[in-house]
Image (tube, rainbow, N blue to C red; front, side):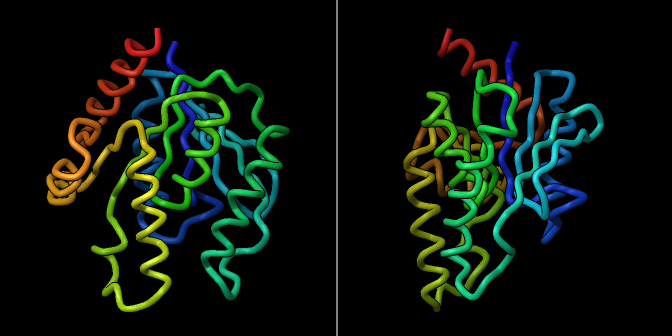
Length: 194
């Protein structure tokens, strides 16, 4: 059976900053009958709960949006690494699936620790969200570039962006128009790892 660990910076109802929370929840709920799922996200406390039958593990972060957002994002990775081994009941995941750059940072570390394929879902990139006229944007873009390089597969949820990413990263970029694209990728990973 395929087991997928999804990692996101946002997940309802505890952490909703933008549309990412709802997009991740919709995707995960759509996969519920296809594979065994767990979701990890930061929030106000260490807590396990269920979302429509999906195991969700929230780890307490150090405090959202301190003065330095980049330091905060790195603190999240650290907090995840010291808390998740005590929260997650198992490590036998088929795939670790990170959403956007902050969730992707945590997912990359977990995927390498568990020796699992790392899937990165991209909904937008900093260069499409920002005017790129400040250091914060440049640092976020460099983290995104690192994650794009390190990802075993990139699921792109944005039509125009997927064409650009395909030019840079080739076959590991998969256009994600529907949940069947994620299912197909997971089946490919199982075939590649068994």
